[in-house]
Image (cartoon, rainbow, N blue to C red; front, side, top):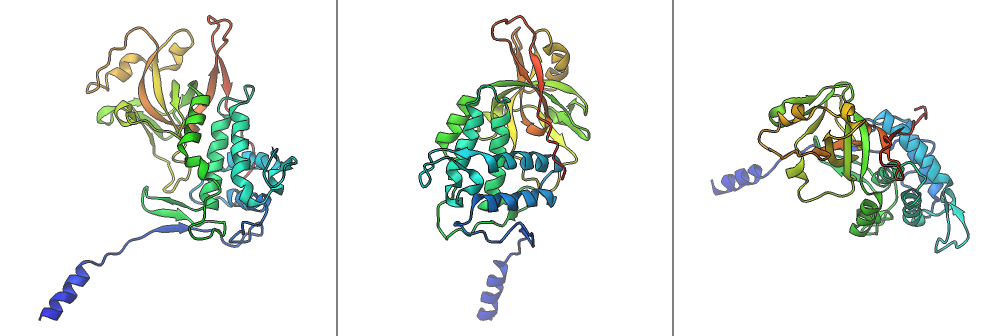
Length: 322
């Protein structure tokens, strides 16, 4: 009798879980796992092939952007690489130097005053896409799922792209990027809701958004300051690009061109009864986390003539065919 009770106790502790694992199958561009002695070009060829293969977790519009930027990364020239002091293209470097190459590549956009204001953020997202495949990726939303790593990494070995998660790099990127004002559009089958799930902006609504931080960093008060929420009814079950968002505010009071791009202040304020604010007379807004794919333009200001209306510069068109 005692033995039967012990057996029952053991059975009570048993549970069953499910996890979805995506891994690269037979692709001519890939030799899996890829050794660290291989060239970066081999890894990039594999990633480009993955983008073209339309995996379930990658939106087509994100795939087109990654193909464009990773193709540019292939041709990026690194100067002063420790093992190769002469200039060398990324595609010709061994994979163990990939971290240095991507660090320089992202910063080349970040510190280029003539580059499109969001280009460094797009490059950063492509770098994180690369890292998720090279080193493996694990997520829990909406259920546990993962991507099997492409690289032949030794157990306990250091990650080539560990700098992407370092506080120093996040701080540098956030401070250099600064604040931006963008125009966004609520896509079809999507909307923005306020408290009690009341719709604030329907599909097709254009609005102005002030970016405070990129998706790399998060503030301790983000949850308290977020009062509007973006619903994406057509969102795929698994989405590696889900984290590519910007924390900031929907601008509800402004001057000149802002006024017809922003939803009326009363329309938003009416849905924030549990979070009353003093709107005042300055440009102000309501906290929200904005999906990067909703952004249509960046507003560029004339620093020498403050009275001139800002220019709306469209986001790059990623024309790559998938």
